[in-house]
Image 1 (tube, rainbow, N blue to C red):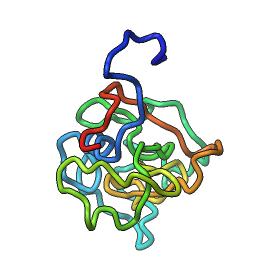
Image 2 (image 1 turned 120 degrees about the vertical axis):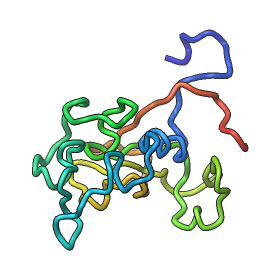
Image 3 (image 1 turned 30 degrees about the horizontal axis):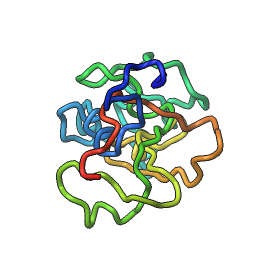
Length: 160
């Protein structure tokens, strides 16, 4: 697709982790973009309202689903939580946020595995929180629970 675009500094790319979280939160500062849902059990497997917004372990559907069947966030983005974990452009570092800039962090410049965000169809409610981060461990292989969401934005990430 990028080859068909006129020569510009903009292209389709993976979002940075900060961009992904900003889009997911859609102006909120709660556990989930629809509010601070109550976890139903002590394991964090289920939440009272999460099933209205996400496919996850609490729905017991055991597979991915077509996008748009659940309620969107405030900005109209569907399936930001659950269904599939989404790749971000950033490399994963579990300690990164302890030392990162507070505004617009760009992520580590290298690592093993990319950041995954959003949770997946077999994630717990706790793992579907907006702030939850995971590691792809291996970005080279396909599987049935990881995917991506592209953004149309500047080729170069700010700060690099």
